[in-house]
Amino acid sequence: MRKADEITIQTQNITSLDLMERASTQIFNVLHQRLQGAPIPIHVFCGIGNNGGDGLVISRLLVEHGYHVKTYVVNFSDKRSKNFLINYDRLKEIASEWPTQIKSEEDFPTISPQDMVIDAIFGIGLNRPIVPWVINLIKHINAARSFTLSIDVPSGLYADKAPEDKEGVIYASTTVTFQLPKLVFFLPETGQYSQDLEVIDIGLSREFIAQTPGFADLIGKNEVLSLYRPRHKFAHKGDYGHCLIIGGSYGKIGSVVLATESSLRIGAGLATAYIPECGYEILQTSVPEAMVITDEEDDYISNIDIDFEPTVIGIGIGLGTGEKTINGFESFLKKNKSNLIIDADAINILSKKQELLEYLPPKTILTPHPGELKRLIGDWKDDFDKINRVKEFSKKYDAIVVVKGANSLIIYQDQIYVNTSGNPGMATAGSGDVLTGIITGLSAQGYDPLHAAVFGVYLHGMSGDLVVQSTGYQGLLASDIVAHIGKAYLELFKKPQQIPPQGSQTSS
Image 1 (cartoon, one colour):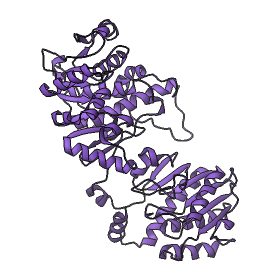
Image 2 (spheres, helix red, strand yellow; image 1 turned 135 degrees about the horizontal axis):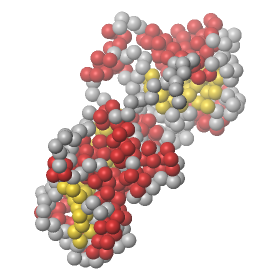
Image 3 (tube, one colour; image 1 turned 90 degrees about the vertical axis):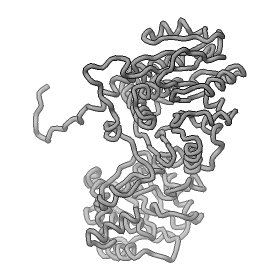
């Protein structure tokens, strides 16, 4: 982002002060459009760098438009950025009340829950621990529970690591960030500091941004549309692959039901479930479209013996980790020639016997939840360390890893994809089994493994988003996600609703 600023200043023949004015005016426009002159007390906390300079510009514009504004300079150092000083003088020229200097806890202002706070203390350039009294100021602001808007990033949040003091970060009601989203907004440890995110275009060089690789790719509807493979008129089921779902044990056959039906709902031409004998009637009744092969054992899988070569295999859901199951899984891996999607207990077995990882085919997809991931790659210091560890694992074994979470990450070597679909209602039993089936079914249809993982995670989340419109978060079941897979496909091609101009009439 710093480089984008520099290139923009050069190519557009403007100064850094001009760019600050432009960016801050954009944030003011967002505020003004929503507040419409409301007589709300607004507290603007400014640091002494360029993020503070942004805050001073916003304060000046608010004052010029008649808002009730109090501006504070968080005076934690003797250093000032040049643009901060210029905007400090500009604000003093027009404000009836000069900015208040905060130098210690004695200077903390009273903030009411009905007030509004604009946080411009630190930006994305924060790279060192915060002085203790400023941490206490941040805690003081959070304790007020007023609506808080952070500029670019909540103060106290680093761009590339988790904060040392988890309470020493602004909990923003909304963060308005410049030009591009930042990875910290999508990771479990750091995403919690922004309830809502808005990205505003401040006119940075589009050419530079287009030519410069990002740290990660944000995946939404437009991105996955390019992955979609339409069906042709003369297609038959053989064109869309034969997937095999292997898993289940006594009391855990439902996981295979969910995965098998998902693989068919997502479009696989054929699906076979390989399960212990105890699940035969359940599978045949629950998913009549699927074929079923049973193991020689009644309650668990011990010997995976199939007489055909499937297009792709999804394995691990409900599998169990008994000794005979582990031996059967090891034997299967050593002779397998199909592409693999590995989940749940199959990942746990690999964690116990890591020498088996050498038998994974290229671009095997693993879909661990956080506990399974920790068993596989070891503990991590923070989410950034976790990403680096997954990258190392991916490179070593040529594997694609889906790191499941609120914003699931799909990682392949140095490539990171951040998913944007899904909701808290999907934190429910069986949701991961559905994802395994979806990715397996897409792989069966000939999607590249990485595309199958990215597209599958998005469609899985979109299905869940469609479900909660009628069930709410608590009422969502994994089987509901399966039932909405077809609607998720249709949602891809739905045009945004056009809002009629004010004063126009539409027929009912």
